[in-house]
Structure formats: C-alpha cells, structure tokens
Amino acid sequence: MRISLQSLIFFGTMSLVVVLGHVYLYRRLFRDTAKHPHWRRAGVVLMGLLATLMTSWWFVPRLLPQQTASFLSRLNWFWMGVAVYLLLTVLSLGGLHTLNGWLKRRREAQAPVPPGVDEERRQFLARTTAGVALAATGGMAGYGVWRAFHPPVVNEVAVKLPGLPKALDGFSIIQLSDVHVGPLIQRRFMDAVVAQCNALKGDLVCITGDLVDGRVAHLAHGVGALGNLRSRHGTYFVTGNHEYYSGDEEWAEALTRMGLMVLRNRHVRIGEPGASFDLVGVDDWGARRSGYPERGYDLAAATAGRDPSRASVLLAHQPAGWREQALKAGMGLQLSGHTHGGQFFPFNLMVSAIWEHDAGLFREGDSHIYVSRGTGFWGPPLRVAAPPEIVKVTLLA
Image 1 (cartoon, rainbow, N blue to C red):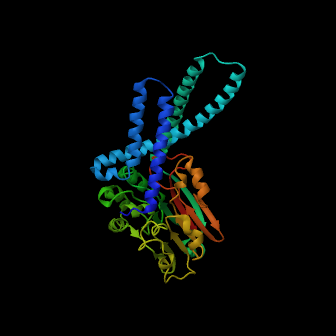
Image 2: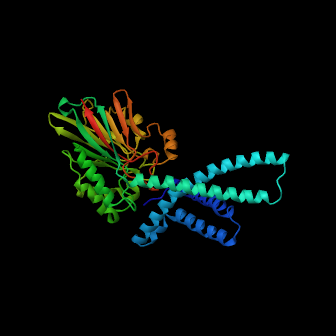
Image 3: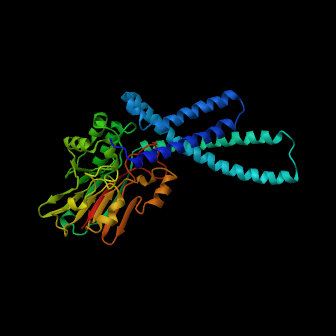
C-alpha cells in the first residue's frame, strides 16, 4: 500500500481535530458537570482512550491479530458516529447556553445574584446540557445504525437512452455501489442484498466501485455472496478508490474467479448481434492522483474501436468526470456512486454543496447520470437523511 504526502497531511489534520474534539467533550461532559476528582479523572481516561483509538485506527490494527483488529475497528467506527452527533448536540446546546448567559448577565447588572447561586445554576445547566445531548445523540445514532443495517431501499428510474434498439426497450440494470464489505458489513448483509437484487429480476447487474475495505484473504467469504447474483447478462464491476487501498489487481482476479466481469478501461457489447448496446467501464477517476500512475480513468482506451453512434452506458465510480469526459464522448448514461449522498446528516448538506451531482438522476441534453447513495456505508455505521439504496434503471428506446 502506498501512502502519499497528501494522505499524511489529511490524517495529521484529522488527528488534531479528533484530539481537540475529545478535549471539548471532556470539558462539557465531565469537568463542567461535577467537581469530584474521581469523576474528572475517569473522564480524562475515557476520552483519552477513545481519542487514541480514533487517531491510531489507520495503522495500529495492521500490527494486531485479525480478530483483535476487527474488534477495535468496529469499536472505532461506532464511537466515531456517536462522537459526531455528541459534538453537534453539545455545540448546539452550548450556543444556546452562551446566549442565555449573555442575557442573564444583563439582568444581573440590574439585580445582582447572591453569592453561590450563580455557581449552582451553572452546574445545573451543565448537567442539563449533558443529559439532553446524550439523549439526543442516543436517538439519532440509534436510528442511523438501524437504517444502515436495514435492507437498502430500492429506487427505480427510467432513462431514455439515445440509440437504444427498440428490441431492448425496457432493458433493466440493477446497480450496487459503495457496499464497503469490511469489519462491519459481512456475509449476512451481502446475502440479503443479493436476495433483494435477484427479486428485482434485472437483465444485468453492475457494481460501481468501493465494494471492499480490506484484503481478499479477509473478505473473500463475504464478497463471495455476489456469486449468487442472477441476471440474464451477468454482473459487471468497475473499481472505486477504496479498491486501490485494498489491492485492486488482487480483487480484480478474485472477482473474476467468482464469476463477475471486471471492466478496466474497456467496453463490451450487451445483447444480441442485431440488438445491443455498449457497456463501458473505467477505473476510478482519482486513482492516478492517489499514487497509481499506471492505472486509472482512461475513457479513450475504454472506447477504442467503438462505434460512437451506438447506445452506451458508462460505469464510472465517481461522478467527477461526467461533464469533462463522458458527455464529450457521447455516453448516453453514466452510473456512478462515491458520494454516499453524504451518508448521514449534516454531511449530506456538505456533500450537496461540494458535488454538483451528489445523488440521484441528472440530465444534460440527451445524456443522463445517476449517482447512487451507496448500498452499504463507510466508516460510522450511520445512515441519517441519506438511506442506502439499490437502483433499478430501466432503459427506454
């Protein structure tokens, strides 16, 4: 695995944010709520351990036995999700507390408060804030975990595909994306997803990257459920950025052995000789920038020798290259993922502001792009205001 300078800067910055966040939680949940030294000492130890877990998750698990590393990884992701909502609620309530304090000081300037009363009131407000924050966090995180592990919703869309032969009108594609099989998503989840896909009776299944978070030796059993996918024209896969962290070439070979067809900057013809369209697959848009100059998005190579007048569907993990590449190449439809639709509030709002095509179906001229919110999840097992999905795309002539 290669680690770029950009990655080191990113993880260094995130580690600083994590430490400062845990210091803030200690102050609000422990220091401000009680003066007893044992309570405060317990807070220091607990927040210190959790901060250490979050800042060391990237490299420490690699030094431990697989079972121990898997347990720590699960604990880290669960706590990360809880910590995000805990910080949000404490910060929000803290803002209200600050406003209330400003109003109170103005009143006290006119009618001074007896000594001792102010300290008792401050501790009462701190305990109330902590209690409300914990309750709100429990509710949001509990729902998010339930939604993340619950069966994905099925979104059905119809797209008019330029050049599609009339004989293929109604051809259906089932899209999976961003499953992230790993420490939290394993065989049971995959079996349920496969059963959902098979029930949709699609003509073709595609997986648009970020299938795994880990090596073949550790995840082959869980991913092996994909061998049970059933469709008339088979299952096709393109790489996402996470495949490069997990061994893209090894996974390409493993998926091929499982019966999936891996499209790495190439295209195949789908259908009969007299009625068909081109299915084009490219490697991840960001692979070369992540330290893999010999591999990466190459639409020119993927479409070499192709008749541009034929109907086409492009599988590309990231929506980033749609306008720059796919539209210029005449791709009628692009299926992507990567954004997760933000995965959980408030990151769904941030992703919507960053990505022009964040989630759902978009059209420009006669071309379309569908960006999936993802079938699984990455990191914290949370899905709030961005439910996971399986997409059924019906092509219209």
